[in-house]
Each structure stands twice: as C-alpha cells, then as structure tokens.
Length: 360
Image (tube, rainbow, N blue to C red; front, side, top):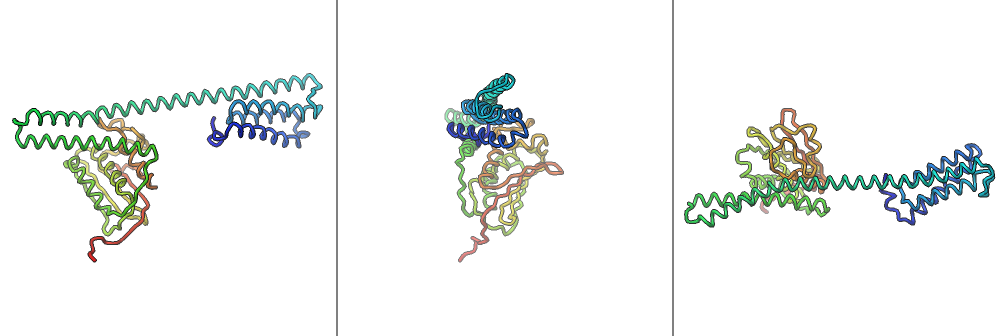
C-alpha cells in the first residue's frame, strides 16, 4: 500500500521519520512499561515497524527494525540499560523479535513491489485496450471520409468530361461532407489531447447564447436535415462572459451525439436560460435514453454504448465533460420519465444585460 504523502519524502527524510517514530513510541512505552510489561512493548514496537514498512523503502524499514530491537533490549528487557540478557527465555524472545521484525520488513516491502508491478501491468493492459479501441474506431471513422474524398476526387479528375454539372456538384458536396466529418474526428482527438495535457485555459469574452446555438445548428444542418429540432431559448437573456469556442464545442458534441443515436421519430430540444449567475444549457431528446447500467460510464474516454451504432470514437461526451469542468461547471445526464435523455450544463459566468442591438 502506497501513501501519496509519504511517497514524496526523500530517502533521508524516510530515515529520519523512521528513527523518530521508533524513539517516540519507545519513549511513550517506557513511562507505562511497569503497567503493560516489556513483552507488550515488544508487540507495540513490532506494530510500529509494520506501519513504517507499509510506506517507506526497505533500507529505512530495516534501520527501524534493528533500532527497535536494540531499544527494546536496552531499555525494557531486564536487566535494563544494558545489552546483556540474563535469561535464556528473554534471549530467545529477543532473537525471535529481531528475526520477525526483519522478516516483516522484507516481506512487506516485497508485497508492495508485487502490488506495484501488478498495478503497472493492469495499467498497461488498460492503456493497450484503450489504444486498440481507438484504433478500431478510427479505422472506421477516418477511413470512411477519406475513402469518400479519394473516390469523389478520382471521379472528378478522370471523368470530368462525362459528368454533368449536377454530378459534379454532388461529388463536391460529398467531398465537403467527408471533409467536415474528418475535421470533427481529428478535432476531437486534438481536444482530448489538450484536456489530458491540462492545456485547456478558457478565454472568456462576451457572447449571445442564442447566436451561438443557431451557429452550431447551421454547422450541423446536413446531419440534422431529417431530424426535428426545437429551440427554446428564454427571452431577454443577458450576454455571458465565457469561452465561446468551448461552449460551442460542448453544444456541438451534445447535438451531434443526440442526432447520431436517436431513432427517426425522435425530436431534439435545445434550451438555454440563466439561473442566478449561471448559464444553463439543456439538450434533450425523445429517443430511447441510456441504459441505466451504463449511464455513469458515458463520459469515460473511448466508451461506447454496447448497442450503439457502428463507428464513433467515444470521445464526444468525454470532451463535453472535460470542457465543462475546465470552466468550473457541471454536466448532468439523466433519462426522461417518458423516454429519451437530457443533458444539463450549468456554468457560472459574468452577466451583462446590455442590448447590443440598440444604436447610440
């Protein structure tokens, strides 16, 4: 068992703490040794050595074990204040104490090393699993738009004379859509990299949340063309001072996630309002919602629902959570009573009720 606080101690400090621990415990025991007996003192010192061995390296632990044995011999075993041991029973007990203390120190240290190796192995396996998941996802998500771009470009180059203007327009539209899809996937990977490196630093400025939402919807118009979208933005909302780019990406990922996973008959509703000094954004749908057993995992990196559609890297919602937390906000996912899911974002912000449309 490793303790983060003690792990930061240098080896020299470990020696000092180990020696002081034994001396302090021995001093306390010395004043009550007549009541508890020197054999109980041996057990208390042995427990102290065991505790030290749980946190420190092997050398400080061995020093503590040897010191505890010598202190017990000199100050507690009759005759006191001498290393001489008169009875064979006490000598045997001292010898056993010395051996047990050393063995305990060595075994505890070895157990810690084994646990550390096991944790490293497990971490390596989890990393490899995530890496494989990412590669499998990207093999589909990136290959599809790249293949589309290559195929459409090839047709434009080799069959330019045979294609009608409508055919050319359709091929160019395919290239545009595939490029946007490719840009979104690469953007998600870059955003996740920024989150993991702690590089995200919000750059706050004033913006209109209504303008932001409609801008995102315009970016997603091709993906949402067959999906009913209802926007319910409270009137007379103030301007919010937050990072426009991060908020835009959050809303984009939530709407894209809903549009990708809901059935044909479902409706997406986007709400925005101000609660005290917080911007509140709600993205809900009338789809199937999330399985209760998986609802706590959807924000994990690379996690994809078991029955979700093929494709997807499982990064969209983890980026939402990371961006929201980077702005000191909260994101809550819950299933609706009548079906569907609802994401609620709350972020504290500076407010301004200045109407920018009024000319002065």
